Amino acid sequence: MNIAVIILLLVAGLALILLELFLIPGLSIAGICGFLSLGGAVYAAYTFLGALAGHITLFIALAIVALGIYYFLKARTLDRMSLTTNIDSQVNLINNQVEIGTEGITTSRLAPMGNVRIANTNYECKSMSGFIEEATRVKVIGIEGNVLQVTNIE
Image (cartoon, rainbow, N blue to C red; front, side, top):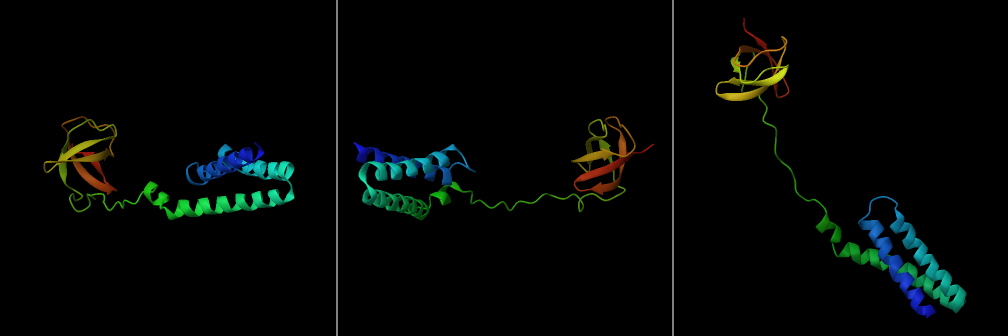
């Protein structure tokens, strides 16, 4: 009975430590319980089976943890769980498409952000002269990132 409890504690400790290392980020209950389980197995072996059995159990506990981590890493389990996709997309900059001084018509109310149509293309814009109603002619006075800075034409 004592040997079965020791083996059960060793297996539970290994499972909890592997769960802590590879699936649960940070220090959590699983890791603490895993180390306590391994410690309990070693303590039970020293207490109920003697010093020689305790030494053997301690060696087995350390070997089980080391081999478990080694085989878990060797099986490339982390590679299957990790993201390996590279994102190579780029933001389309409007610097080359629209020039300062270009005129357009608002397609939404600028309060102060909205949309403007320039050469049959819609762009996001920001009004530099307060609120501007829809279908008002505007002029580009600046470009900040991908947002056109516009003012109304009076």
